[in-house]
Length: 418
Image (cartoon, rainbow, N blue to C red; front, side):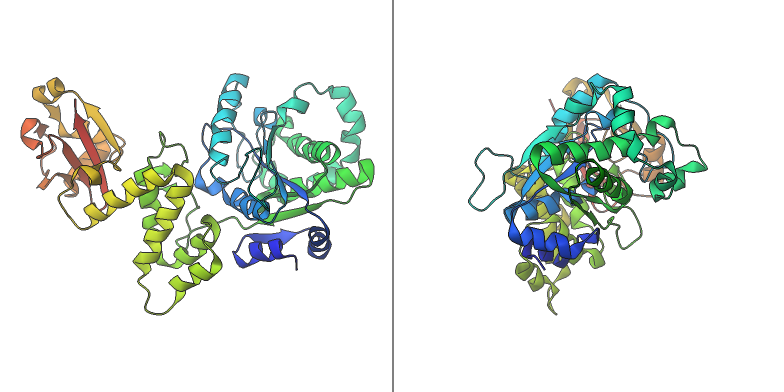
């Protein structure tokens, strides 16, 4: 087995391949060009989207050449794979803004520099809007559409699960467009492999078949396990919602805490998938007698460092340790915490405690805040808030002239006074 493929197998990425032996032989003979797509249907990816891009990192490290394809064109339609209803269509302006954000996020995992380190493959980023937006519909149907069988398409799970609920003609075209992407990348960049989540199997196979019919070329597909947590929940979801990579949507501190609090049974699996640590180093955490919390802290730190940088990872680690020990939080420990700023005059007038908590990540609404208080889980500093009618003013400030709000035992939020 090719060394790079074996790495992906050993780290738990691979679900299926269209032809393992042939792909392995090809990768032994030459450094191949491969691609994975990301549809910019939101301003931020979440961690559940990132499995193929972590795999991309390992393949690039082995000298293969990645193409990260941002779907500026296909995002105008939306992929029905894994969806139970049609997505809301986005404006061209929204798609363009989302593309910019996602390009920056992918750069934390894949090296897009002009001159990558020795042995690394050369990565490029493309946008399929460059060839999809000006397609002539009649020409596309004659040259591309004639190679697709509707009966064949309906055998794929991505379409079968949508038929009862309704599948729009727009979404039905998605597979043709993604297949055309693979064909264009094969023609213009010599791309021989598409990788993606297991829900992309039908789209990938269709692209391979299109290339074979159009030019006789042999290409391959590699899919990855759709990652779930041991508790059955989807990867990338938290009690606050999706674990976004954008720090404005999900703070680096909350990001760190998400990984720090994963189930014990998931730690080793996630170290293999979501960090760049060697398998030998990860194996040290599997030995008898190793404190599982050390492995969780390493996972949280490495993931936060990759996505948000060393400085934010250090801040989050210091803040998390201080709060876990119940220590008085010094300035260093506070810097990594999510925070908002309120004015001194507003505090002097008094802020209803439910309003204050609902302005943070600790409670989405006043009703959530009320339930938090009723359950005994609302704290400001060392003071538990028992009355939902409490009005917060200057007497709740700590020695730093701030307030540290807490929900339950592990969720903290910093209130800065300006």
